[in-house]
Length: 111
Length: 115
Image 1 (cartoon, each protein chain N blue to C red):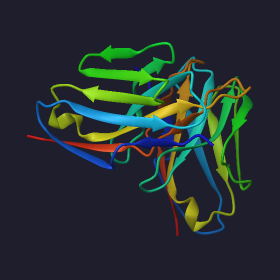
Image 2 (tube, each protein chain N blue to C red):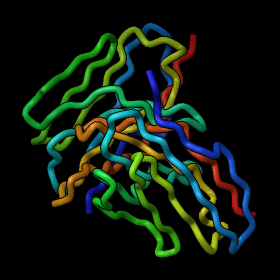
Image 3 (cartoon, helix red, strand yellow):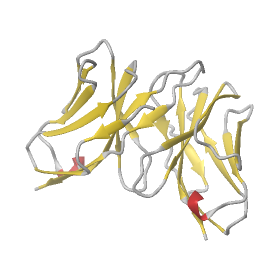
Image 4 (tube, each protein chain N blue to C red):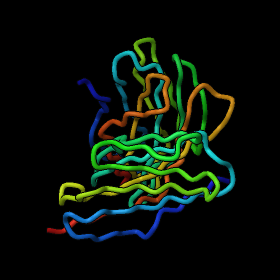
């Protein structure tokens, strides 16, 4: 069965650079979530989209933005990167039910 | 704010025994509670969901209970195997007026099953 696809899987950036993470949800899933997981931490909710509209916002810095496109894929844009942004970034999709299906994550390292 | 605590950072048990993991939460009572498994460097994998009006739910060797009075969920793995070794996260929904159900995760319990 198709799973959530995230790209890239690994990304290395310098401080103050910009990064774009992509997420391709499971077909026919209308909801996308973004989470950030720091080393040894639990996943923290960043933002979600339902039917291409932003639905909810969590602890997402103003330097970050995201959107969901007409084909339901989503992109997380991160600007003015800081060392503390180094983390695993997970995308999850849901068929508008309670269960969320997580992607493999993008490991972002900021040097 | 909602706080979720999971028992001990690590749980070591012998193969064949039953592993019991605890999830306690404060403040608001969620409509449902979920358990996920996470292997190092990989995304959480959904295991079970239990609703507030359900006391117990089972799936193969897994069993989850939900006590809304105690604000606690117990997650059991019977006949544990080394392949069950992973971090297990409990997660609650946060109620709001949006169309989506964002999850609040506990810090997780790392389970190690040794032969």
